Image (tube, rainbow, N blue to C red; front, side, top):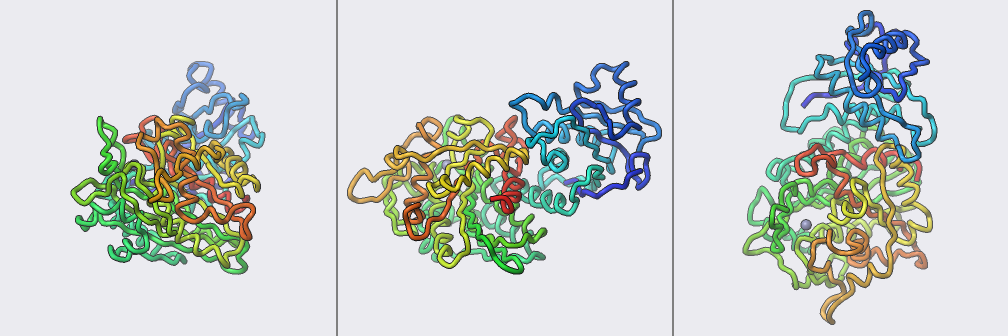
Length: 506
Ligand SMILES: [Zn+2]
């Protein structure tokens, strides 16, 4: 892959000082009031080429760094329905053109006429867009290094750490079923955190997993026979120096391949299911950024459930009743609704850490349902418990996501959601799902939270309890990979940047 690094550039870098070899301008109107040296050139060029300002173009620009000027327009930012993704996408497009033109040391310049709160972080978001544009899958080795010069006062250290976290997330999410099978995913994490102040533990013993993670192990049952597909749980912990003022507990779904299990995905529905590990990938990517930036005040504890949902003679099947780690008897409704089973045991273990934790918040991140995409399109769905809703955590997180180019839609948990998972006989406490595809079930992305609350024991931390704890479930099934190509496209690394920002704002 091309290695990308961000560096603060000096004032006169535009004219080549510092060895920069192109200037990339992201703009809505190309007014360039802060860069009068560019105004005349752009306006002259626009008079002979009407594509300028409408699509990304390269101009010959003698005297400027590298003699190349790349212009990438955002389009109109003034509409009430636009957001900072316009800036992200223009940067992504522009940096690709700069790279293809031969530039390896481009300078990034931002020139936006809009400065309302939607565009508060546009300078940082443009840099993240460049990272996305230059990312190639982990197995593609170009040997190239690209250094991007920042001209708009961005914090290069912070953006380098975020980009490393986002790259790790993309590597983990995008790896094929063998490259990123559970043991390989866990090994990647071990290497990722080897030099970082992160406590890491990999659970790989089948007997221990079957005892302590019974629902997760049911999903993994037919994969245990193949050592390279065998399940793993990765535990990560970051402890800040100084006083802890809040504790985040995060469960990440890492289904490294989802065949659907005995409820096999048929009719072509299986392709792309190596991306069913985007939640665990995002959690690991977030932890990488945290490890490098060492934020104060917040302790972060994660459990990543890495499982392959295989099919075979030992596969778990619908109608089985399995007792969760928290003690709930769960009747399996559909083996393709496996993500919630993996999360339930992870959340139950995290729950045990709540007692004694300062100001705890719980999250789950998962590519959980087709329904979230049917309901919202390419957005992350947030579903939250009552404590979180009263504290407006979901609204705050969705506002943060909006400003970081990782927009989210907020859903409300309802009584019908609990009815969907209510027991159907005296033998069980819960039904994991009904037996249709989530995409065809009404409230298909909301009701899994009812299951997660009940199966993990987190339902006892409700508003009226002695210890109410906010819990937010993020369904990234249709936002973890670029919407234009969900089967084979690039992972987006969402919502790593928004969650990092939320550490300080929630
Ligand atoms: Zn599934």
